[in-house]
Length: 257
Image (cartoon, rainbow, N blue to C red; front, side, top):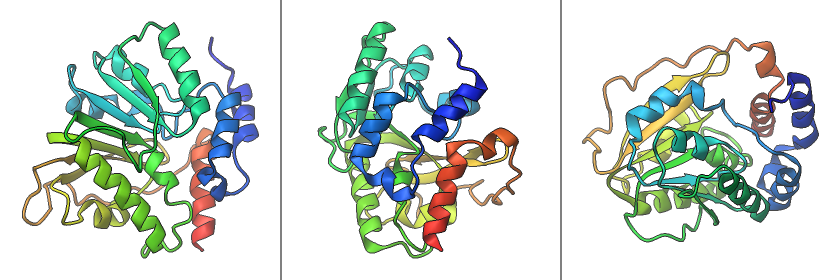
């Protein structure tokens, strides 16, 4: 059943937090997931499917960080990528996602309660790791985006170290985010990582970033052709002004002031 646009927007207003700091509170997510059936941060799969298919092949073992109630794992499954493991910190999200994928017959999809800052997996066990809007939550109390707080940097680096560890040689980390390259590159390009860094953009008014980090393929200077792209201007559509993506971005901007 397809929800009406009006009811969907009413639900978004009902579950959206009053301050960005609530996104760091696990109880907020438990309460939200207990009431919300589905929400796609940063557009649905159709907007970046072409980018995903270029980098994630059938037969790939995939780890999704912070699955929430997104349909990303189901979209991947429908495209032939069936070896998918989803994790989320919220026990409520995990329980509901487990029931959902089982009811739809996606038997190979595994959904686990786990912390992306302490991944409970062995070294080099996934071909692809994907996060979609999950890392952005770590930045809600970052302060100046040009010089984020040390605690923020430490959390982000802990996440990236875990991702790098569980990726197989030549594995790929895909990060779908608001974060622009001049803010993300200093973290992605840390000397301890062996991945190359490339990106594309997608979206209409908002332009989201689709980063592709390929382990073991870092060049000497860290640059790849096509990376020096101008940041697109923002020309918001009405439905984007109504979206939680827009609210989320504004809440963070307000905290950075």
